[in-house]
Amino acid sequence: MDKAEIVEKVNHFLSEEFEVEKEFITPDAELKDTLQLDSLDYVDLVVILESNFHFKVQASDFQGIVTFQNLYDYIFSKVQADQD
Image 1 (cartoon, rainbow, N blue to C red):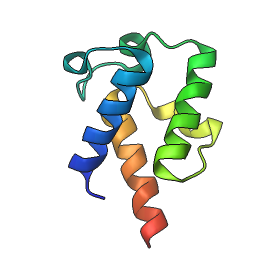
Image 2 (image 1 turned 60 degrees about the vertical axis):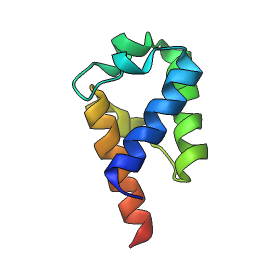
Image 3 (image 1 turned 45 degrees about the horizontal axis):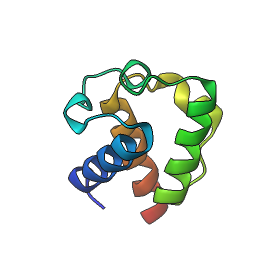
């Protein structure tokens, strides 16, 4: 799976799950503010990532994820690691 496929897939399920218009989901937008995430929403986000991309998310992994681009890069690195 390449980065473009990841971005498309992530944007689709985030807009559906968190009821946010796709045009607000941009690489430099802040994840927490755009999706209006609270602590329970982060749990939902982790479950969605794990079920869609088939890797385990560690809580510490989210410390550096601020923007959607950070999230895309994180997912891409995990997917690439699983393919190696």
